[in-house]
Image (cartoon, rainbow over all chains, first blue to last red; front, side, top):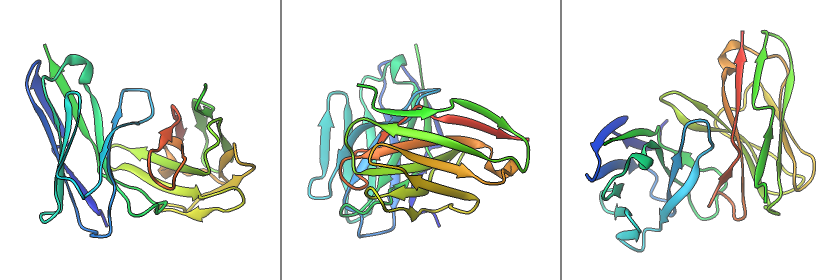
Length: 112
Length: 112
């Protein structure tokens, strides 16, 4: 049972454009929603995370938008650059609970 | 600061062979995890250790065993490898149960 659904599976964006990746969750007990970035041949690395008490969090060109009522959250990459080309995973867990649930990943390609 | 170190980086096994994947972290984290990554399926938790001396099953524990040797080290053992265990394996650690995971660079395992 997949508790975090991620879309799209792949995404091609032109340099300077906005990349948008969406995730939806089912478990209302989730209270921590991170995004991880993975480059080929490397392990995932934490990019940005949000808790449900805010609707948006921004760090540089990366923004998480969170809609608690719809149980959805999304990652926006502004002014996308070729160096942003990577696989992005959304994830969720609850209250220090050890088991983190990951989405299936989105492979982003930013073309010049 | 090395972070999370996994060995080996690549391994080829024949069906029925056994092997142990090693993981060590130098960040004094309490929690450690083993994930497998397969195309289109994201990251799935195999086993985790919330603290030294404890281990628990994740989503896909069948065919695997783990040992939390000390606070730094967490190993994953395949007793009788099967082709279905062909995957990329990631070890991760966290300072606070499930949040802010720090991943190693992975072990690419092929079982023929």
